Image 1 (cartoon, each protein chain N blue to C red):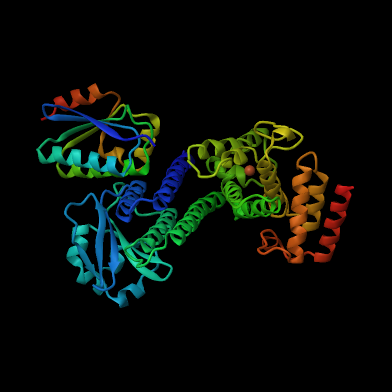
Image 2: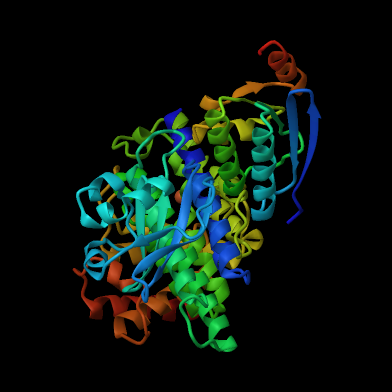
Length: 117
Length: 409
Ligand SMILES: [Fe+2]
């Protein structure tokens, strides 16, 4: 099982998260805490770029449901980008896509977020 | 479209449960194991908030062992009395609304509020109460379907066993018995999981109720008689349970159609081994060859089968076993297009198709094990219990002896 890592890019009021590899329990927690920290700092715009994610397992889905919930509570904006068809299918099935904005490319999400307060 | 959707959900759940099986039986510590398990459950059902509570009998309370999506849950306690435990349905999900009038809920109003419990699942390992799962709202806001409740029950079973086996409950541990127990649990977990899915497959097809289950049993009987080791026997059992999973995305009308099928419909139905293969190759099973057996269960030794028209030399023993077990069950049960055959007729039919549809050596083993089962010479009969009882054992035995003699001549 290959390891999980996340890379982060924070620009002004937006944070872009790029998860990579297979989400195990530890990776899941890191992703959760990373988002939590940003919300605590008052940041409300999060982009998750899935281009380096191969497979979404249930642990990955679990973390994402959590992030969705937290974003809603903080009245933030959550965007998913660079998803493969399989990702989209899983998220749709789980009812996640109803709560996020889906963009083809990261830059599309960034330009959307730039236009809102 | 709906069918495809169900299938995606099914594959996702099946992969999740297989992953869960690997987690529960891993050598990780109980806290870590339970944390991951909780993630698997909440991911499967898109529940942002959940907690696992473990029963402390000295304090008559449930204590939070691990949680997700909620902050600061350590030290949260749910008080519980023996009279409440008695009212629980073992490992069955229950909506919090169902227990709202109960003193158990009233005593713990604050704790449930903090946990944001919407669904409560009491965990029992056999008869012992070991803990509970608390699930919050679902992201999809949907209530649980029956199939999802069934899956939750399988998971609850797994978690309760893992909890029960952990040091939280056990005072003495012996490494050897511990490993043996883990292995036993793993087997049970996989079987429960996969059985739950086989039931979903069979539900699609009114005529094949329990077909997958019987095919799995028949295949086990033949494989054992052939001298296979237990691990390989398990593999073919699983292949038997799942061989028709591809039928889930086929049109129910076609599967259950009474009249003759059109060429288009036949082509459609013949896709199912390939679809089963595509689905199952995404899942990491602990047994090798499951996918090969499944893909080729409609191949024939004369090369006229599908999907790959393989010849006898290219078919593994497992494939030949599964093909025979599948066809034999199809013969001995009612189908939309014809009535079932009597056992005597079915055996004659198998005999007639030796060397064309069925492999001679495997069929001989099948006849032999059937004879043994009729005479009561096997410890656990796998075939006879599922057949109609309207046959005369002496006549069948004579027939089988005749065929065997003829074949070895
Ligand atoms: Fe089949």
